[in-house]
Image 1: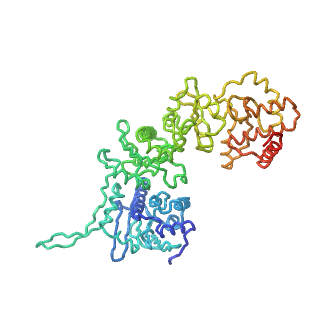
Image 2: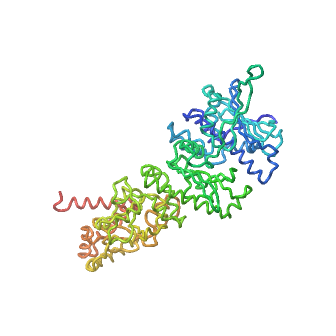
Image 3: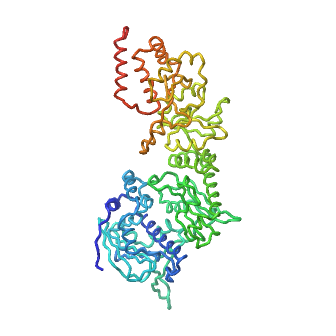
Length: 634
């Protein structure tokens, strides 16, 4: 079959353009990515062979081979893994069958040429294309498991917008990636340089990374001759199987970077072996920051699951709940059968035991970081605090431990400083029985909210919550240490005392009149919730809050506004003036205007928008004009 030229998809063209125009300052990561791909290919064929041994074809001398050729200016990375068919080559190398590239491009634009950029490639599943950072042409020859030698495929591209495909011969299963190196990348042909990079990035791989090296040996008669031997460049000792005391911090760091495609060291390392009825080893990492692409990924959690060093699943969701999906790592079990299937995994009680153990150790590690390395925890929490809050509704057994990890600004903290549930409860006045919170767009906006007035007057604090998930997660928590959590903008919030009977009687006529003039509200009543403002709107016990309605509207959901209660401050001069006007002349047309203004200022105070801002502005302007022309005005 003659060679066929095909075009890359548009997004892939953009990706290659970024790579070939030196977006990345640290180009050596290409070797990490290509060796990692080769290792994955070997793991896949080993796993498939558990059910179909014929796929191995007797080729089980697992290895990843580096072959530098100084004369040709090429570096070849070969493996005897699962290989690819022609269709798989097109799907994997000519198009992008996932949303990773678009997310990568958006993140890359933001990253510019910062130090974080080199780690971007692997995070989005496009590691193969890192080859174009060092090569002006890449050739791939691959043969899928179970296919004939004549069924191999050759893929070639200069990364400029198109690639060629043609049939090829390949004696054995696997893939050869040939990099035709750029002039300024010829240092990657140096055996010493390659040896250094393999030890830096891939020392922990269980599969040998090998390279032919030429050495001088003494022959007969003291003559020396050159001999080529295959040298294994990596130690091959799986880092998670070693004792914690034997592993150096820099080894943990390089393993984490390879696993998570991060550029920073992890915030914490969790490494332990469980012994007893069930035996397994865990090596997990807590990232120091939220990586590029995290918000674009599907919310799938999971650690790499090994059984006796054979990779069974790249992400085993059964051993890590989704609210801890930022944790990266591996778990290796000696008690699961090697031929375990996904269906058996889902029903295996051992995985429940592993998950409980992993969750316990991760939460303890986070608590230790918060208590001992608070500044480090702040950086971590800025990226993953929202994700942690998902656990309040999903992990009932650990919800109080999760709650102890949460940080909040509050009405009594300095802007930018945080408190916790435990600190809030410790500082509560003796007569306070509930934890009050208020949800909104920003802490700064909430600090000026009228809903805080009565709490401040009584010396009570209010937690200020600004994450969208707070509307769902905090009510699911319900209580903390026996203290009920109550929203400060709901009718049952404990911030206000009972309105005196005398006030209720004095304002009864006005309250009744306002109910007829404001069909938008479900009720009008007096409150001691306010000490300065004239009015506010509160949600009923089962009604949606204004903030929730705004969130649903942004998500494109049907959020029909629920009617709220308009509460009036009987001690406010404006409310008293309206009462006196009503008492003097209940038919005064100005009452309609004032009723509308009381309602609209309450809408604005809760962070919502008035339905007709032009009409609102006209009402305010009419008041200004009337006051300016009143007798005695300046």
